[in-house]
Length: 402
Image (cartoon, rainbow, N blue to C red; front, side, top):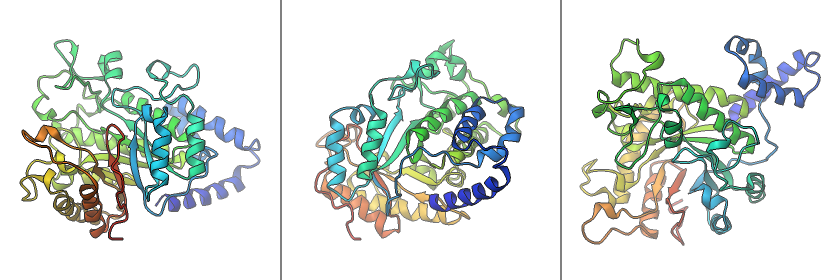
């Protein structure tokens, strides 16, 4: 899909060059300057610059899309430490080929220092002290780089700008884990996150993966007790559930449009259960509408995260059965779209001790392979592995049954 989009972009670019070379004779420098200018322009200037938006930003890196993405999650801390070498060797020695690396992490911090004077300097941690060196290494080894950008879970922005968050009794509201969220109805929050995504694209990442593209869990039960702005959605003739869906979907549409000049794919992480219902009542995720606006959809289908479902009493203990049943549902939902995105689910490579009063179900080679096998048997060829500590199971056959 990405290659097809790039071919179309290239064709349009050639046609445009024929007509505007006399005006934009300064070439690459003009294109780059215009892209930066567009970010700062006022709304009334956007329309005349639409032609220039058709140029694809070139980060200078040469990454080939793999035969199928098979990847792991990597924190900023791991990417910027000696742990990175271990993970590189791990991917190199297996049939894995991709890393999803935190660019904006779960608290709201950047994992690298942007250029001096950037408005994001204050939220930056120096985990990845040499981003260029990291990208050079990934290019050399042809490990496909995906940037993870956590969007609406953002304690840092919420504390700095309570007006962009949810408050209760004058204080920023936090969930039972102490995490704050920012308000998806606020377009300033959209712009804030998409500008970070653009930085990641300029660094050389080939895909921007947006996570926490949603309201806080259980928001339908908190709706009336929290103070927040509905922004442009206040006067829409629909209930609050529909308004939340509209805001989340519109963010995804906006992000994809804004990132189109950068030639990157756009993906979204989404709760697996969202595929099994029309729309989630609290968090604002409509699986079909989000899927219709991305290049890749990544359902988080960790067996441990399901209550009894699909007739399976203990999903964590039956990974093959759970993934099989989920894949059937997702295939049906995506099959109803005119142009479905690539399906690339998140799989479980960790234990879930919170589910057990006795011994915890261990996730090792057999359990990871069972999930992968279930995907393959249902025609889903791509996957990502999640382990928060970036410690992944050894000796897994990632091509099992292929």
